[in-house]
Length: 132
Image (cartoon, one colour):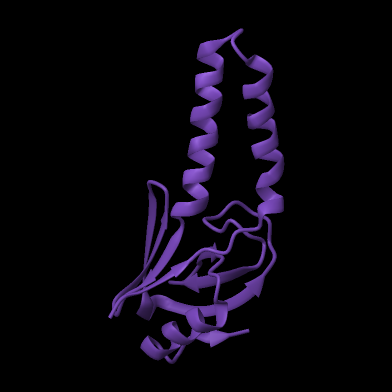
């Protein structure tokens, strides 16, 4: 059975971006209709990325969806899950993150709203996953 986990969003991370894009729209006003259009387009894209980020646990894999980007991690290849606040770019719109280690050297950081339930769902499928 598939379980979908919504992403946790830290608004303070995106507030400066939203303020900059929003103020550029206001400042451009009617002076540049084309510039305002592209600013609105950028704002829509950022909001779409925020609200479309999900993590789906299936019996075979974890599917990470962020806008048009998608990662698929086989559940049996996951070796470790660690809590982190690493600010590196990832499909995690919050700094309250989980770092998933899989295969030999691969890692991906995500930020599910309910981290403990996400970990439990994965450990049910792969009890060999180390946590911590």
